[in-house]
Length: 216
Image 1 (cartoon, rainbow, N blue to C red):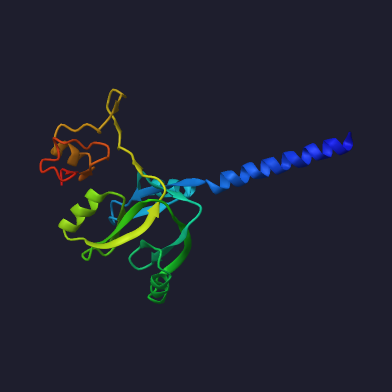
Image 2: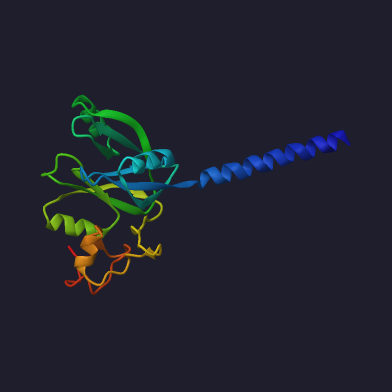
């Protein structure tokens, strides 16, 4: 009886370990996207506590940037103490060059894996927040048209982002949903422009030239 019970417990443990391994093999996690209205920097983190802390000190939470995997190529996170912004790269040589130039290495931020490319763009006129990373082909094209330099694919994601709309309360206590804007002036007042195809608030009537970017 004891031998049978021991065998049952052993097999149960093996099964549970197999389940946990399968979960780990398929584990993915959300990357949170935040925006600093003072510096213009977008920041990305998988850490919920870091996201909450930044939200409390004035950063605007913009929803899920993308879905990352626990497996894949390392993406390094760097911090510039002079400009106060962050940079993310797959390139170990770029990481080492930035360290020699005074940037602080903050470790592996996430992994690059999957089928969805994130594009990297550079703003030569910005002191902080000079790099931007996006899944949106329309956003990439728009930014290159207004002076940003396209620098190629930065890394890959296993799932797409889910931007959130910014909601405000009316005097009656009802929630005002700004996802439907009567015109671009209203969208600009809400601080959500430009709006890219697929984001909350986008509509063809606001995208007059049909390039996938409304109210640019």
